[in-house]
Image (cartoon, rainbow, N blue to C red; front, side, top):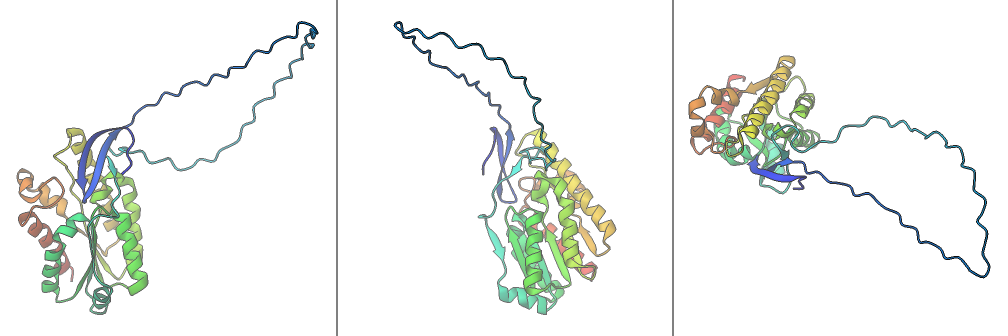
Length: 284
């Protein structure tokens, strides 16, 4: 993961190494042109040329530059920057399982490292509860954009069942402003007749500084607010309220989370999986 500036903190979020950085300053050294002095011929001195009249200076040309997108600055959100995640651990169902899930009108699930850890137990729970197959695309570190891309890819190749679980968003604390667009894109892909269950997020990495923890909480709130606003626009979007579950147990969070993000086993895993399974069951 390429980082700029001095590294101040490193943590794993969604299975991904994350660095909180402070930009370093570079001083540009001026360039000095040095011209070599010529020597005069003593026998045949050459008179100096007449002084040249200075040319009138032309007004500098200005070229209008169209405004472009501002570059993303590492740490702008206060939570740091998401590093490369494409080579991290993943769980992706076989093509045969994906097709069987569509035929059986089962459940598609898209998640990050929390789902990589908790997914096998969740699949069993949902399959036992609904009696239908489950296909998963769980990838450590992936942000919502990658989960939505996978949803679009499966939609094109296989079609979609009537129920879709999106358990991505935690890795969007590094760029929370982009999350709302991804939710809208997912709802467009799913269409109005399918139900999307989106697990909201809780990030508060207590192994890092107080400033980063504060940013994590603020960015989680922004993501959850965008999700609630999308649910108000889309009746077929159901929010699975993991953040509210933890907030109601503020004095016992360490019972459910091992690092401020990932669930403990088995207590946190069972609690989060139960919320997702209950949402699927209650909306049937």
